[in-house]
Amino acid sequence: MTTSRQSYVKRGNRRIGGWLFPYSARFIDMLLDLQLECGVQGAVGEIGVHHGKLFILLALGRRVEEAAFAIDVFDHQHLNLDRSGKGDRDVFLANVRRWLARPDAIHILQRSSLNVAPADLLQACGPVRIASIDGGHTEECVVNDLLLVQAVLAPRGVVILDDNFNEFWPDVSSGVARYLFDPAATMRPFAITPNKTYFAATGDVGFYRRLLRSRNAYFFEKTARLFGCDIDIFGTQAYTFSLKRRVIERIRHTPVAPYARALRATMRRLAR
Ligand SMILES: C[S@@+](CC[C@H](N)C(=O)[O-])C[C@H]1O[C@@H](n2cnc3c(N)ncnc32)[C@H](O)[C@@H]1O
Image 1 (tube, rainbow, N blue to C red):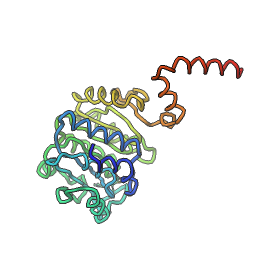
Image 2: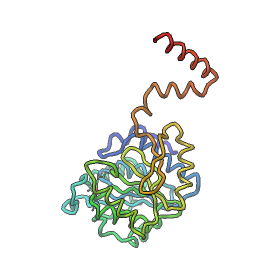
Image 3: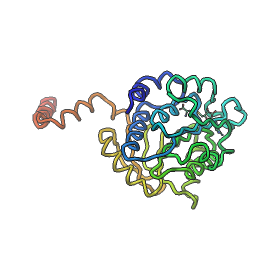
Image 4: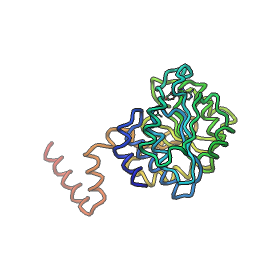
């Protein structure tokens, strides 16, 4: 991970307006590292960038030769049919200039994603290895955006979808259901972190599940089923982050673990 990406994940992103849980930022950061290590190549980008909070993290994870795209209606807010966020091109560009070395290398498509064709994206930046979908939250937009990124996904590419389980945006989950039951769908969900659901091509799901679980053992909470797919859940429970659990986990992997267990049992007996 580069130093600027590190400081953006730790502190920088907090100064930018938008929506991104700290653990999801860390998880996406690790996903970017994993793709770099495994030689996954392609552009990065987002549908619905608002002020650039997540977009900048994705763009900081690029190789020099890789492109980035940003799709947002920005000041054409009459196209933002469900009022999800409110992109601002000037604020977005100021944040991009602050954090990215080559701001001119960003391909901005200022229009509704409903009017973006796969060929537009391929022409602008080629196949995509990591894309976030966080634009219009209507069922129509979600199905459109999933099919759009599916059509441009590079081998071993990943798609991050926002708000799939947010009770304020039920259309997102019905859009996901419509997509998954569409015979044209080639991606499947494989992970969940706070407010984010991750998809990859069916054949790549095993690859990501294996690597992400081994690198995130501490934050792994459980495997669940979503529309017939096994999906791993990471970092969603407050208990996972509690100091008590951290201390217990640390001690569990040291030689004093059996003594600590015996002490705990004795204290429990005495307390009765
Ligand atoms: C929830 S915000 C995105 C938050 C952002 N991903 C972040 O990191 O904070 C949703 C964004 O999608 C944009 N948007 C809404 N409808 C859209 C559409 N149909 N096509 C493209 N962008 C859209 C809005 O202008 C807004 O900036």
